[in-house]
Image (cartoon, rainbow, N blue to C red):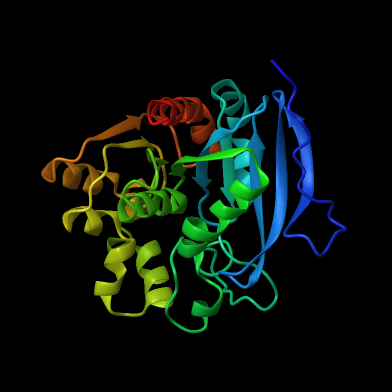
Length: 294
């Protein structure tokens, strides 16, 4: 297997360039890097992680959206995904979960504000200036990846918890944009659970009709479709009953004849121990569909 080249895009000291290299490490023959750029959508610097497998590429891309309180670091350091991404020749891109900075609005609770962007475009003050993670993930960061890494236009998307919600919403609202979608322990109907109700009230206002654009269950009931959905859920997850309510999505997928696979795992919780146990299967799932779409 050919050694991966150095993929750093710019030295951190070069302030005039579009992307800074914050770190790069050799990993399973490829390179795991963390990078920063000035994001127009959020009006802030944004960090993101990229794993590039060994070889010359170009490679298809798997996007992974992390959950509440996370940064780009959690998934790249805890999931063990690099082994599987290297095996299947897939680039993995991991954005941050929100804009950050002293001038970015925040809240005292862990589930609102910085680290809790919910992958939406906020419409309410003071959030609407910077919290535009939906457009950032859909429109801005993909161009950065395409311009600076050996990536093809073919991409799939996955995520965990709040990130699973984001992955489902982005895939449902943009048919054909992502070849496949999967999620670990996603928030499937944020309009019906405390995490989502708090965030949507703050970011989108009290008109619940506006919430539907960021609610997978609502989108599917409105007729949005995907070729298939792949969900893993731990049955010892402390958030399963109150915040995630995976069975609602399963029921709606059945009602709307949407092809979906739901796997429930006894003894597994909401942590990265759960993700690391099954991430290899998710990457293989996406890699297979990305190959078939080529």
